[in-house]
Length: 169
Image (cartoon, rainbow, N blue to C red; front, side):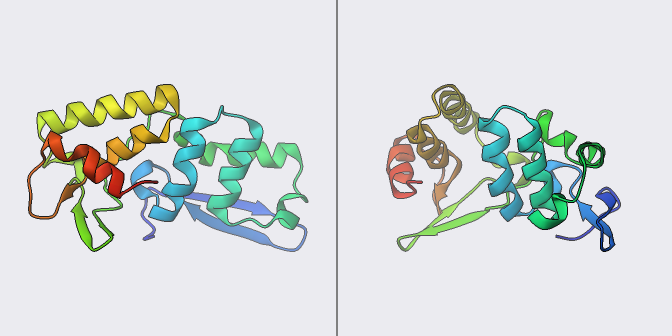
């Protein structure tokens, strides 16, 4: 991940050394690996001291032995670096622009979903809402079937289930 002027700079001490780490300060600065780790936790788990600590330690790469040396006050002092995660997500970059599964290429939306039709947006919104309400993975598969189209073909609502079943999570 390229460090930008926007990224958070976190400074802290362990018994052995001073540490300076740069972490994302917004959703668009996350790497794909970070997004895949963080998004399910933020969307599906209630905010807690443990969750904030887990995400913070993941972002800064802090080892268990180092954070066990920190007291609660030191730990809480680092939390502002991840507070943005618990506000409304504003991810406008597609970190997975293309999927290749079983010899098929699927093309995802452009950044800021510039190539989305109104129909495609409506289906995506519907399936995301159903997933958030039920936590049922079938709606994630249908969401993926809506977001990704067969390479070279336009979005067709008739393709949603077929693509979703190919991309089963």
